[in-house]
Image 1: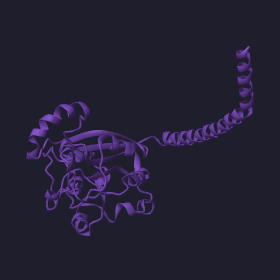
Image 2: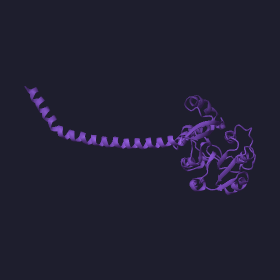
Image 3: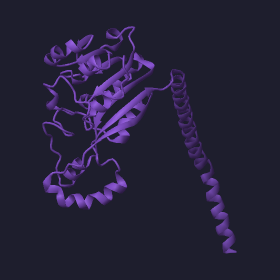
Image 4: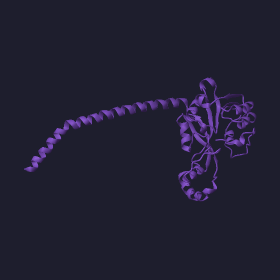
Length: 282
């Protein structure tokens, strides 16, 4: 989710509670070892380094942004996250905090990236994410009006590849063995002026059906599921898959048995009908 207002701002305003980056920073303990994906021009990076005294490693795809930000971090890696060899680049490294500030929506396969982070996150560490909410009222009202138009910023930023609701972003982490919660929200009730009349028609329905309609961005906090539990879950999945195959095999055999039974007993049924017909003619 692009925010060009931050491009030339090195210091972030921690009093701005409407900022998703402020909400993320407030959840980072001092002196943490942090891996920051997509730091852009370093507005979060500088605060973590100078104010929280964190040891920050950054991964940034834009060489110009990386050049600006590297002075605020201990290690700058210029790379495409989705092409990064996590095992090689982060060999023997683990982190207390991994951040994705408006990043996951720009990826083709965010689940794979989240999965790759599992082994480099400490057992008591956490992943902090800000992500736009595709079920926001501004998107819903546009759809009702027959519109789905990209823009230069916001939820429908023209660089966004993936879109998430509350349930789908939590499921993304669950699928990759994290326990995730909605830690906070950035709320906005902004409406395009042409939708003023529509707003009053929509609100009663949205209040009942979509309680997140005012949520502009979710702040996600995710932690690793215990490694032993992960192993048990994987084993259980394998067992369930094997049982499913056995059930399908039995169903196939039972189906063939039914077919044979029908063939074998069809003459008997014909004979019984003749007997009954003969009895009725007496």
